[in-house]
Length: 392
Picture (cartoon, rainbow, N blue to C red):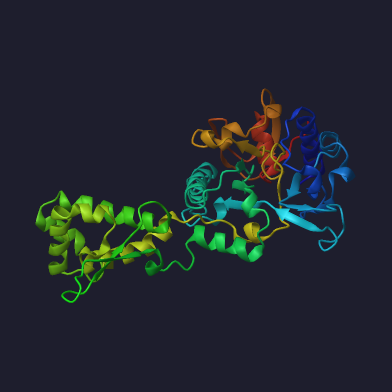
């Protein structure tokens, strides 16, 4: 990045901070703070081990320093400004999750546009929230667009604040489906049997109320609903595609789907061994499709620094936006995270990495060379290293 580009961005970041609305976390004075200044060269320098007392007024500090990135810690400490982690005196930590579009299995690098990557990341966010709200029952959740490639979720329920790294890793394993065993999600129920005459039987059920078992049950139920409405030949052809399901088992499954559908609705996979075989195959598929591919080190690190909502992301020029839970579906990051400070006038930039840009509902197909674009587009290009500030 050239010096005039760096100076322009730093200046405009300062203008934003003089007008911007920050949303500091709870207990802000008990947290460590850090920031990345605009420095020369390709690398970045993190300034950390600061407390709010060190920074003074947060608003005045940001307007004066005009940093490239701003962070606060998930952890709360006795002395957040201590220069070593051991000297801080850890008290508790938020449970933080990070979803990054670059790490999603569904994203195809070089093919998916930035907008498509962010859309896929929102789908992963909704899956993560389903785990946190439905499976764990967490209530104190904060959702944040990172300003870059994804989303952060902050859990501040009292029950999680004191968890250590090992316990947090168990949460990570659960939402990612790591180590999921089919037998672990199946409930057993003893039925029938008369004293001295018959032995009791054991039925195996997939739970319907929630958890991975309910997700697997949903797939089994969908399959049963699909085949029961077909003629036998079509149903057998569909069911025979599953490993270990020959014509005989497929016909049995078809009859059960038509005549004993209520048992399948109840989650009873022991109505026939074939249903249990297919349900076990669905376990791996369900984990692959419905897990939340979070960044493990962020969640397990009780001292992690995370972006400040309301700050600017120095790699995009977009705002780190807190999102109300009921507004997630409607949130459009490349529209709603564009700072108003950078809207309303054009600037000239020298494009070094040509190609399309989508911002504020518009698409710009940019060629190499000097062009005049809306400032928000110019800031985005410069922050991402795709353009330099053109001379005035």
